[in-house]
Length: 224
Ligand code: FES
Image (cartoon, rainbow, N blue to C red):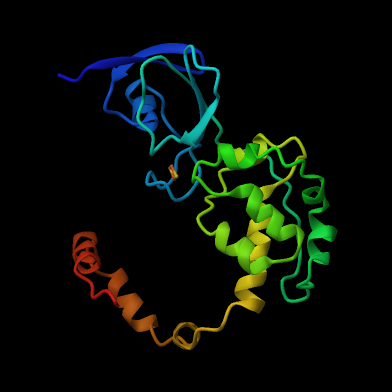
């Protein structure tokens, strides 16, 4: 028999087993998760959540699929946060800091409060990667922001209204397309796919029963 803890989902009290994640506790409590739930493995960023433990002043942020419930946890999920997302043509974009000034000028209004870094569900140095974006160092911005899952919690805490995940996405795109060294092996494989070299193989796979596909996947050869 599991020990039970009391949690509060959107203000309503539930008693749930202590070994559950916030996400599984919500399902245990009867919620059907349609939004705010994706990969369940800490990668997609769909399950951003904020919580406070009763008596603790600090408001914390986490991914619901990765965080265990605690007694007296007050929980609200954040399935979507309205970020500013600018449109651009990556083929024509300037690769200097001017592009940030043009598309995301609010990054220059950063007040250095570091609330973004403190709230990051991935433990990233968000304020630092915004500083790199400000000075057009897209390589470093891409590197520091690499594990961003775009949950949007950083932006929800930013007094300057910066859309950090979108800024970082732009930096990673510029870095990937123009700055990082090319990878011949990858380029060749993409060309093979485009040329249809794998069409037959994919067709044959699609005809197989699902269990056989799973077995093939689980026992596949993994390149070192
Ligand atoms: S469901 Fe994808 S990160 Fe939690």
